[in-house]
Length: 313
Image (cartoon, rainbow, N blue to C red; front, side, top):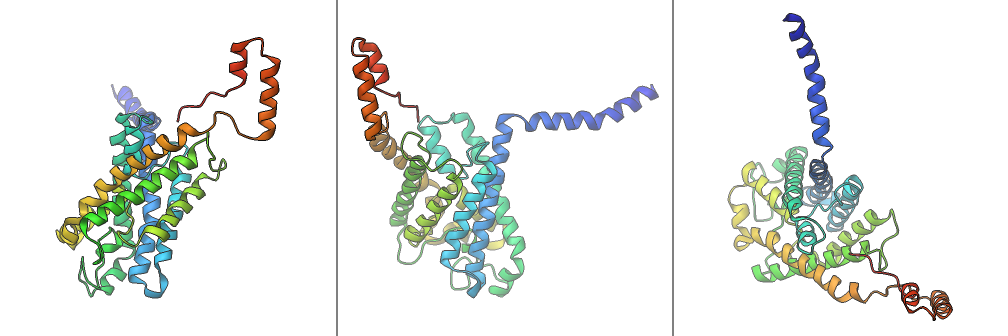
């Protein structure tokens, strides 16, 4: 009895490790962890750059925020691009599911990973900059005003914007994001060179911020805005994080979903179907013409050699 008990207790740690290893090897679990970690990386860089702008005076700038989020996205794609696609954005995940590019059963897995990663990044940023936040506002945690610090973590409307203009702004900018993402990754069009996708997508996010970010803070991502906002709610900023800006909080959640879906439809509807089935270059056209002539006696053969089937997108 003692020998068996000792053997069981000795084998227990190994069996636990095997169980953990087998769980981690499941696709859904790997995709969840990939979205969690990639979103965490993106948000730590992004929120950290905002903290520098708000708290550091000469140490940060609006351009620094754009670069922080842009290169944060680049690093996130490197972390998880080969596993989950590194969406890091619930609007992108929603659009891929709605357009049939990904199974709906993966939607809650991806979004949960993104939300937890974003929330964890907000908590990390708060801990790293706790002293600076406390010093900046004299120990107060303010949502509005010149000494507000809640805007380190989530977006808030400026005075020149209304709620519905902000909604349209978020929808439009997210639509531009999704349209360009489809273009960057469309192998049948003019995609980014293999291996350069992370940096090109990072440049896209940076350019969106530089050119279209001032009106609403270009959240363009429910996973970027809602979890950090919820963190500020429980960390001491209070209910005002949801009430500010005429209850602005729901707009960065809903508008990106709509905008991303419309942007995806615009690309797939206007651009993707009109892409030639073969590259339209003079040398290729001549070679194709010769091939068709040589097989003119066989109509079926001519049809096959004269076209290249369009891959599903």
